[in-house]
Length: 304
Image (cartoon, rainbow, N blue to C red; front, side, top):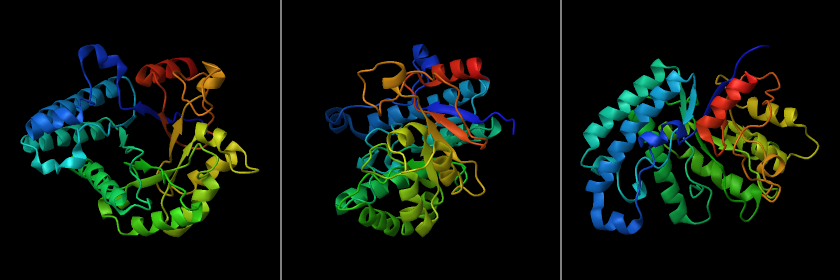
């Protein structure tokens, strides 16, 4: 089947960097404590305004997939979004961003921090992680984005303590109690470390229990392949979990193989050095590379 996959990049738009456009304005904890929610609100409003500029740029560039930054609201674990003095204007701006993304046929996603571990053995970590997911889902709701896997919130299980089986059970238990606006978007990604979760692990221990889609990551699968399975086999497992939605996948070449032999095997490349093999599947591909949109535009020019 001859088609062009939906492709995108993550968070920073380097093409607009010299114009000061960013959604990652933040502050250190000391500044947060000194200047409080008034300054947080000011930065958050500037961030969401620039989200519109990035979505506009993506539309002009033919980019139809984009991972939004989880840093749009600095220190959001310390407050509720409604507490911000500029919340009303922020809410209006987010809705404009969501409407614009829909008019330009852009699929948006989130990838919360690695500290978001709902399967943690620590109750305080679980509580903070659930709040983090709730706030990501709230932002998508304010944008008017569907409560569906069309707009995925992607996480890792991020723990195997004391065993994969036990951590997967905790993950599934917490998942079932999550609010609908989180649960209807939440997807789980394969890992790069050999002690962690492969596509087979996530299929057997998680998807088969709760039906959550699995995000395939090409580099992670190279670093942590399921025993005896080809890339096609592993990708097929993940694709099968998305049912009525186009599967989200992540792609990076190996920095060690293509750019710096002293790098770790799991390190992401700056650029894309080879044509991405979709194995005939229709996919939404997020590039996890250092050169962001520049790498994507270069790839589209060279390989498409």
